Length: 177
Image 1 (cartoon, rainbow, N blue to C red):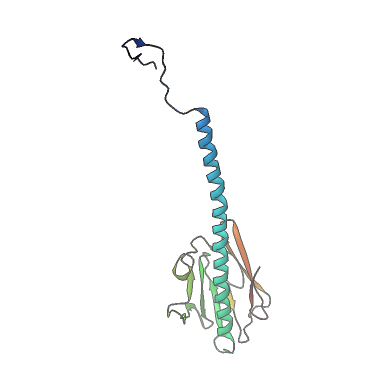
Image 2 (image 1 turned 120 degrees about the vertical axis):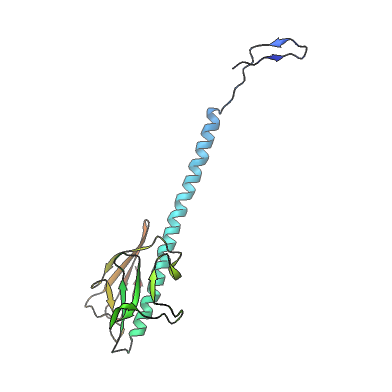
């Protein structure tokens, strides 16, 4: 597009071109900046997933320890940990009534954990992806060990991050692999 300008004395000057838009260099700078921002965002998401799965593993580990301790010396009614089939949580229950959660002594609420709710509220993307137990349950005995003959394992996953907890049958001790 050409525009009409004057030389200051009123004489028109033709031929001056008015350009509007972005140069190739400006476009390349924008693309490079966007690429750098994307590269910085991806590791942050991976770290967030790893942090969530670690927090979920520690929460489950504490609840398994509680179930083990609650079962010690309780020959009549040891504890059971029941894992939800949808992979979104678990509950601690009595061996006599595995369908009803125990009462959490700290809160007075049912001892049930759902990822994304309550004390697991920040763990929205965590799932139980593999539960290697009998009938999705860990049944403790009065000595604090498991009723099953072999060790059990539970795998927690969040995005591309995962951790496996192994529960020793003889002692009921849970460890993070």
